[in-house]
Length: 110
Image (cartoon, rainbow, N blue to C red):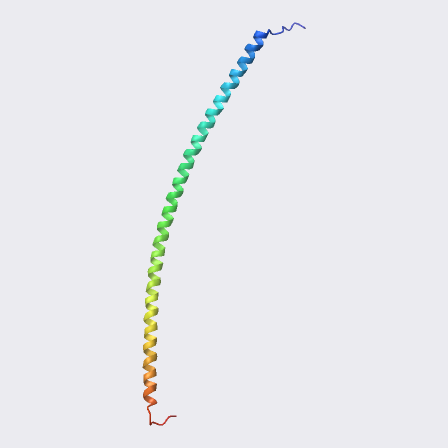
């Protein structure tokens, strides 16, 4: 009608086949893009994981150094406290011995 030619069944099948081929090529191209994007993402993820591991190792080493020095200082403070405790005990015993000498039996008490 109006000068348009009606395509034959053979032409319709050929056009449909061509559209299907183009669609298939587009699907393959997208799958390849997706695969490449996935590989890129995986590589970046592995790199980020390794960087995090390295960062954590460094932090743990720093913490270990800090805690080692803190523990050493605490041990030294503990020893100093023990020495102070022993000194106080010795001083208390000395004062008590002096008091005992003043309170010898037979002496007048104040």
